[in-house]
Amino acid sequence: DAKTTQPPSMDCAEGRAANLPCNHSTISGNEYVYWYRQIHSQGPQYIIHGLKNNETNEMASLIITEDRKSSTLILPHATLRDTAVYYCIVRVGAHGSGNTGKLIFGQGTTLQVKP
Amino acid sequence: EAQVTQNPRYLITVTGKKLTVTCSQNMNHEYMSWYRQDPGLGLRQIYYSMNVEVTDKGDVPEGYKVSRKEKRNFPLILESPSPNQTSLYFCASSLIFRGRDAGELFFGEGSRLTVL
Image (cartoon, each protein chain N blue to C red):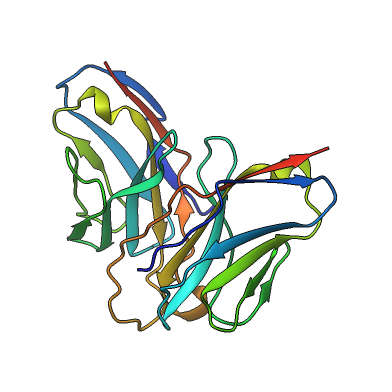
């Protein structure tokens, strides 16, 4: 599975959109982009995932560039409760070859939402 | 309720005393995995299992063993714990990659282990 690169930290004002970037320049055609977040020392929580089209759910939006080498997680109206570490990972999808089950989380981006 | 359950949640032990951290999931997931989390190092994968009786090493397997005799359970075994295994441990499970429903990981609440 490909490795991802994220900025170590970001700040965002409460009520504003938080845009968290992720670079995955070596992503393969059968790899999905997944985002998780971890609040304090709780277990990471799934947010959203996508392959090549932009995705939106009740928590966030995921924008994937056309070449799929990077993506951006958007929290449209950040609240103080969104303060967390956000992880971007890539993972092989259905029928993907080379699916080893190995996952690399990295250190993620610490998002601090400020009042 | 769909969940991944780890036990114990907190444990203080001494060097060399064998211990097992259990992990159980009730979602019939094929894939299970263990991670450790240390300050400044993020989540690092220890071992994973693609199905019953199928296990493989992650990035930091040294000093750990696992087994997958049943689909729902994936215990992490520390045969001779050392202080450098003091860490926060997470177990996770998921389906095996079936299209759009593939791959969402469900994590347990974590097990904080201290080895003196």
